[in-house]
Length: 265
Image 1: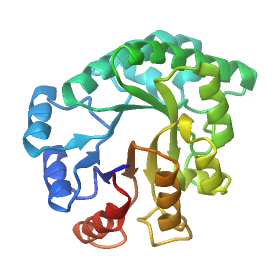
Image 2: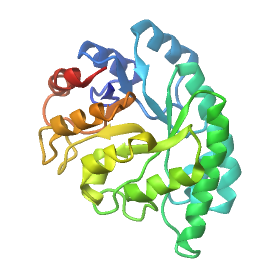
Image 3: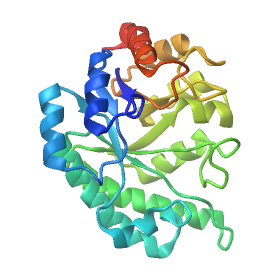
């Protein structure tokens, strides 16, 4: 198990956040956006700082493609297929340059003019195409279900069971679930059982407590037990903090670095 600092905790630019995360005891952070970066400079900086950026989103530097990637359009529209594949290929190239192991994929919001199953089929089709490309690159595509009760009303896939079924349908070793513990606590609870019974289908985690979406220890989730269960299940990938700090970001980051140290491989 490896832990990533939240990429925007420290309020600086991309490079300052990398440096501050390292100072607070992390060997990785998660800055999801990449399309505005100078990739050569960013890659050199990560190497110099001996840091890893654990995941990035599917993005494109082509302005004509960006509208197709928005949640209001997303994977569930027929005309999005080619723009998504082109953007994914561009994101894979960014991963290779930056040394990023994971690409985060999201479905976008549900449509109501066609059957839900047809929309799920379109998402599965795109994930299958992503998997074929990712398998050749040693990169993992992680699909994220999100809660619709608090943060993302209208999003297509919220339940972890739906996401796991989707990944089984895709059946690619390079396509897995991004299990966001905060989102799944809101959606369904039963976090440890859902994780441990499907650990082979999970490629990445996001961390936040509930309610409030702040760091562990501020809400109802017992993260010590959750981390122990994940480690005992044999997971060896990244768990990234994606939450607001309840106090000074540097203080919270140092505290979280100490908290997760016993669970790291």
